[in-house]
Length: 424
Ligand SMILES: NC(=O)c1ccc[n+]([C@@H]2O[C@H](COP(=O)([O-])OP(=O)(O)OC[C@H]3O[C@@H](n4cnc5c(N)ncnc54)[C@H](O)[C@@H]3O)[C@@H](O)[C@H]2O)c1
Image (cartoon, rainbow, N blue to C red):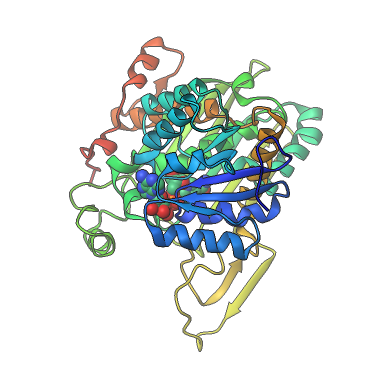
């Protein structure tokens, strides 16, 4: 089961042992030529749980570590998946890059969870460190690997766009009722609110959909402008702010320091045909439906495609006679245990983690750059920061203006500084 350097299998070390590390571990069931060989995290119990899960699922026999430097020195680790929280992203990557650059660790590649950084400066530093260490790199944006999205994208380009022209409008949304750990809710730690946390998915999904299959989005699309709105619709209401403080402690204070729980952004691009095309993104932590809802639409001259993660083939109905215990066994961020409920039998596959991990593993083993790289992550961060700037200043941001690039290079959103006050 142990992977050897230079062999035909990739030994993966997972840095971080929380929610998304659990998803990746489940996703590795669908990856034939990799083993989870190590896990490191801040709490011994969560690391042990993840190692046990990997053994139970037969995706590896990982060695537990408390320190990421020690983990990457393990010769059974050929590549690292970075899943630590946003506020420790940079220090995690710096530690890994230093170990590799000094020759204490030998890695083939690094895959890093979204968002790449909390600011453009941070994302640029992450990319610089990884390139400096000479590593192949992948940006873990699962939605552009979700089978519903990739297959519909492939078919709509092959049949619709080939016959009638490239698509001109993408609409992407991710919505749920709020994140699962305290740090997500804290603007300084997370980098903002739902715009930073979830619009990163919708912005990248929009870039992906508007771009022909197999072509890098950065080559096909030139960003023209960004226009955005943010608001705190639910969680700054006193009763809900108190609920957050009860759940997460006094550091999460939405009476005094809210983050946005709603964001919408419109990004205008010029595409490879020279036409103007538009990507709309809507994200919220104030959506109460069955659970997490991902939706995607792509519109072109003679065609449309649509994907909605809650339109599942499997559903169940529970009558009012049954008082179910709260759980997340039907769907991520589940909000109810009764009535007619959608259920997703394999969320790791449906949301794209399995295909994403398979792609990264294959490219690292082949010594080739993944299709989704950290340069894509940096571009997403630039667009997100332009969206915050637009929302803060109430104006459309011209991305062709060199002054915008200069401004964004050191921009920290008010939400991330704890100084944002929503209109009441
Ligand atoms: N692609 C997606 O859909 C998706 C979904 C959720 C989270 N994420 C991203 O994954 C990252 C982690 O999110 P999460 O939901 O797993 O968070 P989480 O709070 O559930 O888990 C974070 C884990 O990191 C560990 N950790 C904290 N500081 C650490 C350090 N210094 N060194 C090592 N480990 C440390 C914690 O102990 C915890 O186990 C974030 O960047 C988040 O944006 C992506």
